[in-house]
Length: 134
Image (cartoon, rainbow, N blue to C red; front, side, top):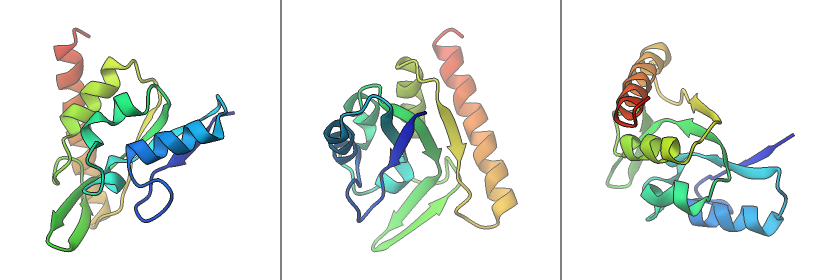
């Protein structure tokens, strides 16, 4: 069985570098990352390098977007916030990522926002696979 550690703001591993350091400190092959760019933004200056920083140790990816205005930070459907999802998905595809992409439903109205996220992810996956030849 594999165990994935999620990055969470305000805890041991907010961003990808801290998450990689924690995984490396555990030093077990079956321990990797549950990478959540929505949790990392805007705290992680290396968010767009996460796939490289986590060096193939990403076991699972959470998908939700994040929007920040002043001190207010809120989650939204994929593509409705400030995360560069095309970069995240492109880098995952280039790394031969085979894990799950998990759509999180942390915003209301839940059904509508989930549909928006599903459509955005479907479009991103089509763009990335078309560009990469398959």
